[in-house]
Length: 166
Length: 238
Length: 125
Ligand code: SF4
Ligand code: FES
Image (cartoon, rainbow over the protein chains, first blue to last red):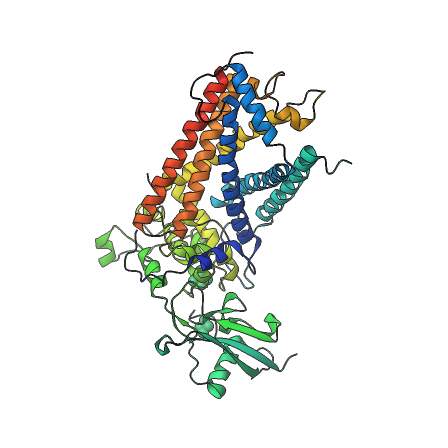
């Protein structure tokens, strides 16, 4: 149903909308999950585009639309590999590891909760009211995603830079 | 126990052409006083031009919603002692056009509520005109929707929802919770068309379970729960 | 397409990424011969079972990469659509958003699929 006659709330400006989206202070962790899921999703999507472009050099780059000789592909990949050898990219990959892991596990949590699983059934409300959708299980999954994300970032940084090994 | 509190109140008169300002009032308080009591004290003794909307003073009519210390709450339902600050900031609810001071225009909110057809849809027209029987409901059938029918249309959930802030057309937590309430009512026969409208681009799929609506709801309605359960119904279309 | 279909596909592609992405990450884990560090071996072009080119040559792994590509493209761009619908409102804005994202998605899919097909068919040295 498209509501046509609603008087548009004086077109709120972008900065207000973005603040609401990105600064969930005073609200519960479900709201933080919403913000983090969005931010991580957008960043991972940017990485995905970069990754598709980057892996394109395995076969010789954007100009190659035929099967190239083995040596051409190898040379193209070695060049890109050399240019990717930079601690900045390594740290970036560590952060991507964090975001991907968070987005994945929190995504599983959201897929469950979005269809009512892991939430309690409706009941007869009695004071003091208990919020039936803020279950420990669902919140635990959020914290699980946070801890796995941090763990995978540590693991990634360790693998890439060896920072936690020395 | 404090016996005085500073109220920092948002003042705005659109007809004056001046930008909004905050005014501070110092109010003597006693134990168990609510924010509404303090605001009415200001109106009675200090500044009669302060505009606010209220009626029942007991969290039943749902007209005194405002942002108190940054969260949407009912002024009559919020104890000053529970806030535990010396200065309380009072603003009109977010996500609504401001009429004046603390009064907001809720017509869009009510229109969205109306648009989900918050009444029982029956196909048996003759029976409805000449009723011959009762519609009995078991306890289990009642519990399916009872919680959601506690809604007092105060609009706090609508003020807290981040999607409503961004998207004018989004139905909002209150309307979607009522949509689910009528789908689950065993006396209702309009589930198919209700589910169809819930599945539109401005309906149930725009909810991301940020849970802010349930956090601020003063009546334990838990709109977020209703919306997630509604989404399951919309998925299976029954 | 109807909003319901688009969003159901969002959850399904999410599950698709969960499966094919796990395979992808697991394959990256498997690429460690004794003489290389883990990361060097991940970026190795050829020479042992789970270096880059042999992974593409393996039909099953190449197919799972293609599934990952399709699912991520859809899931990511639909996620952006959800955000952009909130930022830019009105029927015409929604149409622009839809077509712009559709174009980006087509480019990503064509380019990525090209990589997979060509890498799958590159012969030995
Ligand atoms: S659902 Fe709760 S917060 Fe929302 S309008 Fe109803 S009573 Fe108010
Ligand atoms: S005055 Fe009626 S709800 Fe507060």
